[in-house]
Length: 375
Image (cartoon, rainbow, N blue to C red):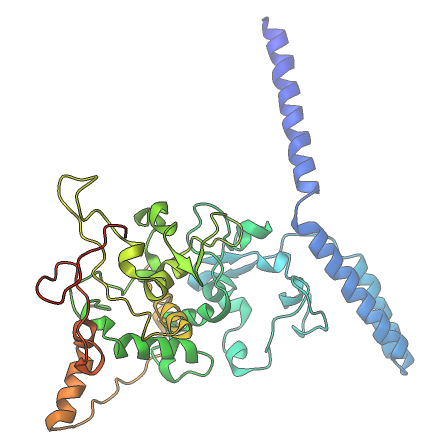
């Protein structure tokens, strides 16, 4: 091929690339959402104008409606410099953009058009969007502008958007007083249950607790590469296997934590006790089976609490809310013995109120069940 033909071919390829890029941008997934919001907001203003008796106010509302319909489509973002976040969530959730919807309120009931709930509460007023962004509380992928990617429901994104109660785990990241904080009741209950069932006897948090198993002070940062898909396939939530799909990202850290509380942990992480695949045997998880004493709601609460234990996120000290350390009760005799028993997590091995010991894989002797190889 001559240089002339090569030059023509390369220019044709470049032109094709420009056409493809233009078409992709023109049909961007966020544009219909934003356009629909402007139309809905304009319709709402026109209804208000029709019901307005003051002619001047009615004219202002009509003018605002016309302006809203002509608003150009654009990428919107919140820059939270202190937290190192650049969140484009308001590109689709325009009702939560304080520059477009100054009151942060509207009458829409469906996402992504509805406004943020409870904007008049102390919780929201203490966390202005312009300062905190969206993903600092909700997680997700702030720079993305496609639905699945923005919500973190894509492969290799390890912090998908938190759902339901687990969003309260975000309170744990900054609030030392979350145990008494309104709006963080489920996370507070999670910590209470964590201590009640003796989890701290094996798992330390920031150096406080046992060293039998892994430290949980940064469990929210656990990379997926340390959780094999093989183990995710063994998880059962409400008796059902987790769907192996990226949409809604069921293979996430929250379900991994929850799995150890609503399944037999030895079934979730069976390892290789009989050395079928390794030179030496690797026993299954030594974690007790808590299903008989912990409800699904309790498992959700502990999951919520642990979801906020992170060291990876850089949070300025001035964002932290400190709290005085609770005083320990001054007890004597058996009452003090029970307090010490529970403080150091003895129940993790010896059971609640020391009534029944826990199962151990390497336990031997009369009355011990043989290990079921099917696990």
